[in-house]
Length: 303
Image 1 (cartoon, rainbow, N blue to C red):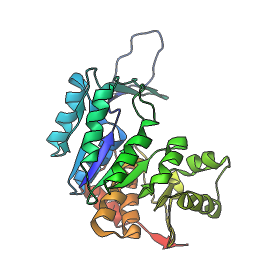
Image 2 (cartoon, rainbow, N blue to C red; image 1 turned 180 degrees about the vertical axis):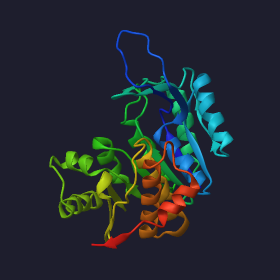
Image 3 (cartoon, helix red, strand yellow; image 1 turned 60 degrees about the horizontal axis):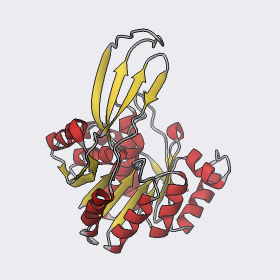
Image 4 (tube, rainbow, N blue to C red; image 1 turned 90 degrees about the vertical axis):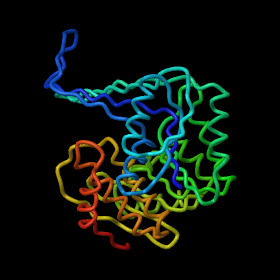
C-alpha cells in the first residue's frame, strides 16, 4: 500500500478577477475550492491512475472535513489524526499578477504527534510512504527526520519531496525518490545549474548521499532521472501552460505508483513525466484520460 503524509494540508481557495484594487472592495469573477497539500495531491493523482492509497497527516475543523469529504468522494482512503484547530486555508488570487496568502495551520500537540507515529509504526516492507510539503509551525520540518526514521524501521520505503535542508536530512534514510528542480539542486550546492551535464553531476552527488533515484525537473526544458544504472532525459512536451500548482506532486505520484507496481525506474519516470506535464496543461490536477494521452507523447533517452 502507498501512504501519503500531509502534515499541514489546506483548502486551496482560488479567486479570479481582472485586477486587485488595494484598499477597495473587489468582486471576483469566479472561484474554486480544492483539497490542497502536496501529499493530498499525490493521493488524488494516484487514485486517478487506478492505484489505491491512504492519505494521512493532521486534520481539523470544518475545513478539515471539506478535505476528508473530498477525498472520500474520490474513493481515497483516509486515516488522519484529528487536531483541535481548523485546517488552514490558502488563498490564491489570480489577477493581473498572482498573489498568494497562506494560512499558518493548526498547532499539533505531542499526543497528536504520537498518534501519527503509531500509524506509521504499523507499516511493513510492503508499504511505501510519500512525505511531502511543509510541517506545522510548532513542529518545524525537523519532525520529518523523526517520522522518516520511524517509517524506515518498519521496512517501508519512503519518497521524500522536500527542498533545502529537509531534503538533505532525508538522504541518510535512502529514500526511493527525491525530486528537486534544477534551481533547488543548485541552491543545495551553492551553484547555478543550467547545462544538462552539470545538473547530472550534482544529481549524482545526491545519489551518493543516499537517494535511490533522483528526478530533476527543469520546467519547460524537460526532466532528468539519475539512478545507479544511468541517466535518462525526458524531452519537453509542447502545450499551453495553465497550472503550476500540483505539477511536481503529480510527477511524484506517477513515478511512485508505477515503480511500486513494476519496479522499473525508467517506466516509472515516463509516467511521472506524463502526470506532471498533464497537470501543467490542466486547470486542476490532470484527469486519467489526459494523463494517458500525454504518456503517448513522452520521449526518454539514455544519456
